[in-house]
Length: 447
Image (cartoon, rainbow, N blue to C red):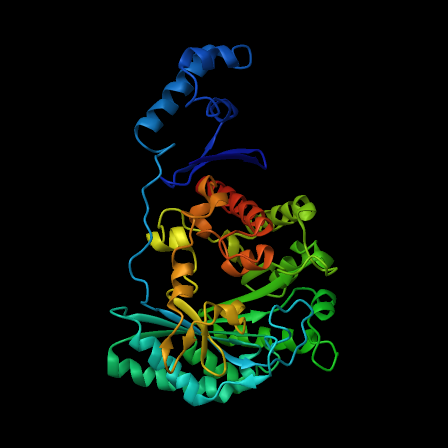
């Protein structure tokens, strides 16, 4: 499927099947609208007077050649769902159903997940490691994400779990990759040293400018958290050196100028940045809606301009949503089904219950089983497994579908009370981000 768009003076053409991306001129951009529906004579007739006839003929010929070579308008491949249902590669351990912040937009009810606040015991964590190994088939590389709530409230169990998993690596020939997401409030030197030694990736939560962060992410006693957290994050990053990390923020209707938060983080020396739109019920004053899309588009434009202008300088930064690889596609299953929630990725609650992902934790209609007895409600996982861009009507004719795999199941559920439908607002924002990512690739290809 071909997608063409105009941004910042550039006519950009992208084929989502072949992966071909290039800048065109206005003539080719216009002709592409008719190249598949009209013959050459008709196209010349349509544009006679606007463009030179000789130029028209040359452009039409060049575009026909690209089509013949399957570089543009390449036919959709006949993708089919994967066949490895039941083979798991990753678990998200909700190591703490508790938190020392009281973020106003928290999907997990300030860490409790609408249930009793609790910490995961080490026997549950070890059983989770064993469950993953026993259900990973021939997969060699496995992943454990430590999440919450705030996982550092249960740091001793985090440490014991990592050491246990590394012991099991030697016994069963597997390799674990560890990730931890933290609000950084308790990120002292001892914890930092352990994370830098054992965590392959660390995600640190920060919403940008102090006034924005403190308005949405106060401590549980109501006091501001920014000053403590920013110091801890900057100290951690210095120690992290070249190991992977991301500082991740959430923007809301209260900071629709979120480009300034990205710039502020970059100016502080943070190199790896991600900001995500809030996912919330429309009744909240901080919720985003489709009427905000034009404003949000301009903000992504500002981030793109800063991203480009700082590239190659000591002020450059990586922005998660601009970091795409159109030449090295994910596996077919990821292209059509996204994250793998409920199939090869699951979340574990503190008591060992299994859910499709952390955002479904404690929603009993999505209870899959537990790490002691295994999968009990296989039909729930099968439902996730069979839901993809092949089954979602809104995805079938979308040019961005291979980059999102149908979008987030949890977002679709929150927006529609149905995992089989996509969140339209999230879709539109993804397409805007993706256009800027493609624009940046075109610009960088010329330098």
